[in-house]
Each structure stands twice: as C-alpha cells, then as structure tokens.
Picture 1: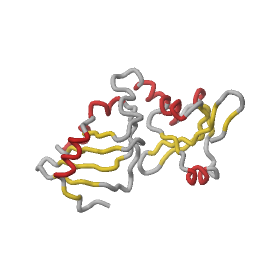
Picture 2: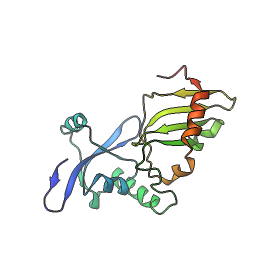
Picture 3: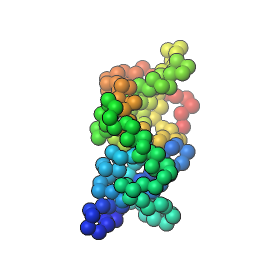
Picture 4: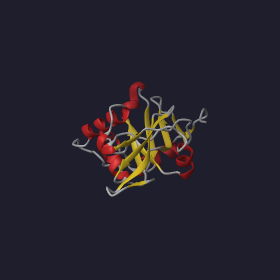
Length: 176
C-alpha cells in the first residue's frame, strides 16, 4: 500500500477472482472498506508475497472516485444496484457464515457451505435428491462469494444446521 499526498488516499491491490483467473488493479481509495462498499465481487489483497509479485505486472492504476469504463466500473454499478436492497451487507464483516445455496438446486441437489470472512468456502455439503450427502473441504477453484451481495442474506442457515448436515454426510470420494 502506498500513500498519496494530502488527500489521504492509499493504493490497494484489488482482485476480481472469477475462479479460473482474475482481474487485478491498483486502486486509490481512503480505505479497504471504501473499495469493498463501492465495488462488488472484489477483494483487497494484502498478502505480502502476492503484493511483491504483482508489482512487476503492468496493472492499471485507478482512483475509486473516477473509475474508467470497463470491468471495474461495471462491478461498481453492480454494487450501486445492491446498496438499497434488503439484506445488503448483512453477511459482511463476520467470522464464519453458513449458506444453503438454493440457486444450485436445478437438479434437486442443494449445497450447504461454510464460508470464511473472505467469502471463500471452507467446507461444503452436497445434499443429493436421493438422500445421499457428500462433504468436501478442498477445491481447485474457490472464488470468494461477495458477502455484501443481498442475494445471499436469505440463504443463511444456522451453524447448527450446517454442522448437523456435515456430520451426516460422507466424504466425497471424488474430492481433490
């Protein structure tokens, strides 16, 4: 993080991780929270080794209050649409969060997920329509879920409901 002059802005490494890759920028803003509240589906990268490695990349450097057209501005517009909806930010800034992903039930399969504070899955239970349930703790791709996004608030389940499903599930034989 670099500090810029008298306007109290710092430079943050920002990533939009879409699973198979990511988009990266240096963003000037007053705080990490300001970035996360203004732009959907991004994270502030603070790992020293990653920041050092990225310094050799040719990344766009932008100011949060003057984003150029492109993917970052689209994610800002997405966040603006979220901000006034019920449930906005409800799951952010917590320890663990537990969700039942109803959107994945296209074939009758439901997924319960334990998410860390960064929105990444830590554990998951796949509940199949035949009653079988599989548990998984590792994934080759694990993009963060935007915990400020209001679509996830109604999916929240209790830690007890997740733990009960976890205990009843068997290890996924195809897990990585």
